Image (cartoon, rainbow over all chains, first blue to last red; front, side):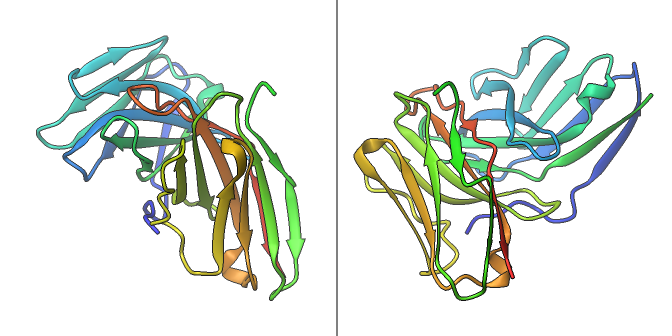
Amino acid sequence: GESVGLHLPTLSVQEGDNSIINCAYSNSASDYFIWYKQESGKGPQFIIDIRSNMDKRQGQRVTVLLNKTVKHLSLQIAATQPGDSAVYFCAENENQGGKLIFGQGTELSVKP
Amino acid sequence: GAGVSQSPSNKVTEKGKDVELRCDPISGHTALYWYRQSLGQGLEFLIYFQGNSAPDKSGLPSDRFSAERTGGSVSTLTIQRTQQEDSAVYLCASSLGGGWNTEAFFGQGTRLTVV
């Protein structure tokens, strides 16, 4: 089956700093993107989404940037807190209703 | 229920046995997904149901894996003749489906251990 990458990359940040997590997607036809947060022992939780007709969307402490030219997505977390420690996944969707394909996760570790 | 419910939460089975994993999606959600997550790795797509359409089975790793969704609600993932490499967390998600409403809500998963 379709799979995500192995050996999750890690990002370590100091509490209070900003975090930037990156994701490269493969399907130029994807038109909807989502970031998920997965804490240990739990299922992924929705953080923020963005449609392909946008290049930036902001939520509470989080911002998603989309660069369709280079097929790149990023998640910015402002004033990172210990509770933000988790694995973060991007997901892409094609044709407004197709299956969600998850990208490689990144493990975020926040140092107090 | 309020969220996606999966059962059992943990399952230990002997190699060669068949197992069934159950998913109760959020009421009204027409789309249902199954994913597999091995320890420390990402989510591997298995199968996707959308309404009455034929399911997208392109992610099933072998013919030992099958899934059905009865009445457009509850789904069962069946693994026949389990192997040790089947050990993983199996996650189910549901979404309203269609249009832009494809935010998927995940269950807690079923941790399958094949010994």
